[in-house]
Every structure is written in structure tokens, then in C-alpha cells.
Amino acid sequence: MLFFTVEAQIPKPILVTYKNANNYKDSLTNIRKIGYDYDNNNFIIYSYTDIWDTTTQMYLHFNKSTFTNNLYGNPTEILEQRYDTSGWKQNSRTTIKYFKPNLDTLSVYETYDGVSWNISSRKRSSYLPNGKPIYIINEKFNGSKFIPTLENNYEYFSDSLIKTFSYKIYQNDTLTYSIKETTEYDTLNRVKVLIRETQNVKLLTEWKNQLKIEYSYLDNDSKEDEKLYYNWNVAQNNWNYTNKIAITYTIDEKIETLIDINQKIVSRNYYKYKTNGDLLNQTLEIWSSNLNSLYKTIDTKYDYRADGGIVQMSIYKRNLNDIDTLFHINYSELYEYKSTTSILDLTTNNYLNLFPNPTNQLVNFDLGIPYEDTPINWYVFDRTGKIIKSSSANSNNNSINIQDLQNGIYNLIVQSQKGKMYHGSFVKIE
Image 1 (cartoon, helix red, strand yellow):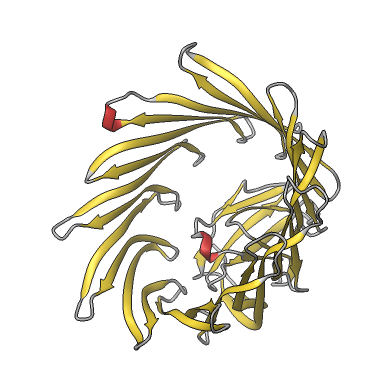
Image 2: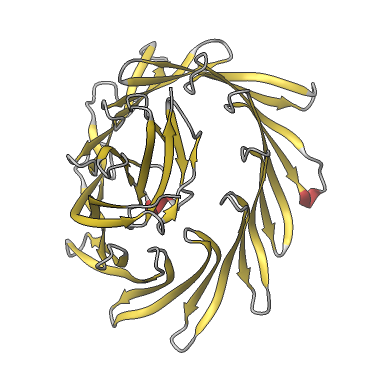
């Protein structure tokens, strides 16, 4: 348990503008923009989406949402309105209940027909005392009862490492298809083997192997060295090797090379980082038979503010069949922020699960938030409340390199795009 508050200048997004090009050679045009507003506690209370109209060359209103939050900044009710030629109209309402401040157990989605609210669907969730999910079930309301549509189930080893994950698909209240993934770990709790099985319940089939991935690492490091992929051969009743991803590292770069069964390179991904761990570039090269070499096709670039917030994410592309072309920007996201002084009460904010803990190299966290609530910003504080590391990421599943930190106790605060705060503490050891 943490027993102090932190005062920090934390940037909050107030506007995100999205642009793209229909053709990789075309210039960028507006798509939409999303804006945000916050209360005095820096909890999100309002958001809107405007869509670019190519005829009028103007942004037109699309929807807006207002948020009612609990003491921890988590929404307990979200009211959405849609805009048409006659003005704003009620569209949907979501009410949310929580098991812990950041773990929702029941979300009910309703739509408005112009007269009254009508239940449409709901999501039910259950968790272990440590916050790990047991199941997440999506259900739709057919007018008389709730019937399942999707279901996720989780099983764990005693140390909270996930053992089995299953994904179930329902049609007309009947389970039709299931996917199950079983994970094995090595003595350092690193993923060693992942096996995926499928089951067509509708056809009354048994569980069948589909995919196996074997992982290897750099000595006692958490960095992956190689991933081997196998598909199940039904006729031979065994696993057949298909390809592998070989991973190498430099001081500021990670390189993933996809190699097929004949030891031929298929593609290569480059990830280039700043010294603080921020991703600067991700470049994809694909093997060209015509050139008999790798050909750069996609380049993703990230620009940052001094305080760590992403300013712009840009994707450049060129056509594999058009060898002489240069890169052209194909997609862009522009971010605007306001810097706010937040008094963060670490005894009451949303708890963040960090692992491994204690650790000497990497600390990992997984928020489990929707993709549309990314990118996230994270901040590492020492015991005096001073920010000593910060960065942004486009995923809610992240690792932070803490090898450069002195031994001791540190606090991590993660902020989602919609302003929600999560916190946790970790211990750095040798």
C-alpha cells in the first residue's frame, strides 16, 4: 500500500486529429477529430467526435459523450448523443459497476428510441482477489432474457501466471465455436510454449490442435531470442514446423526476421528506440522476388513532446509492385495536450498490477483497457515524488526497462488517453 501523494505536471490530451490518404501517393486529408474535457480533478467529463465532410470541406458533428465518474475517476455512467439535421439526440447510455476501483463487473448498454431507454446488451466480469480476470461474458438482450454472444475464461497457476485462456462464440444462445490457448513457462516464469486448440461445438468435434509456438530467450534475460511456429498435421497426427521469427538487438534497435521452412527470409521488422525506451520508428521490409532482396514497404514514425506525450504518429507506405516510388505518408495522428498539475492520491487511485516484482531489468503492466483508450502515458516516480522516467505507448500491454535505476522502491503512474489514472509500486533489485 502506498501512503503519500504526488504532485506532477501530467499532459492530458484535449484533441486528436486523424488524417489519411486513399492512395499511398495521395496527400493527406482529414478523417475525424476527437476532443476531451476534464473536471477540476482532471477526470474526463466530456468527449466529442467530429467527422470531416469532403463536400463542404468542414468538420460536422457526429457524437458527444458525457461522463459521470466515481471517486477514482472511473465512469459509472456514459451518455452518448448523436447529431443529425434536426440537432442532438439521445443515442445510448452505459452504466458500469465495479469490483475494485478499476475492475468493472457489470456494464449495461441501453439505446434510446425517442421515448424510452431499452436494454440492448451487457458485459459481466469476475475477478480473483488480486484483480486477475476469471471470466468476461458479453450478452445481448432479446427482449425477454440475456443470451451470450462471446465469452472469455481464464485459469491460472498458483503464482498468477495465466495457464489457460479460452474464447467462446455463441449463435442464438448456442455455443458454436471455441478457441483455447494453454501456456507453459520456464523456471524464470517466461513463456516457454503456447498451444492453441479449436473446437467446432456445432459439429460436435473434439478439441483439435491448431498452432504451437516455442519461445527461447537470451540467457537469463527476458528478451526473446527466437519463436518457432508449428501447425498441426491431422493426417500425420503431429506438429509440422512452418516458420520462425529470429530476434536480434542492438543498443537502440530490435530486429525481428520472419524465416520460412526453407530458411528463406520472408520479412523483417525493425523497431528503433530512444534512450528512454520511446519507440521512434517501426519499419517493415518484405522480400521481393523481382529484386531478390528485402524491400521497405511501411515505415511508422513517432514524434514526442518533451514531457513524453506523443505529438504525432505517421505511417509511410510504398507499393511493393512500384519499385521506383519513394515513401508517401498514408496516415497520421496529431495530438494536442494541456499540462495539468495533478495531486495524485496513491492510496485511493486505481491499482496497477506490476510483474515481475521485485525485478532487476524489466517491469511489465497490462491495463486491459480498450484499444480506443490508447495511447497511454506512463511516469516512474522515486519516493520523493520526482518523475525520473516517462514515455508513451500505443499499447496497453507494456514493458519498462529499469536497469538504469538505483535499487529501491519506485511508483508507476499510467494515464489512459481518456485521462484515467492507474498506479502501482515496484522494487528494483540487483
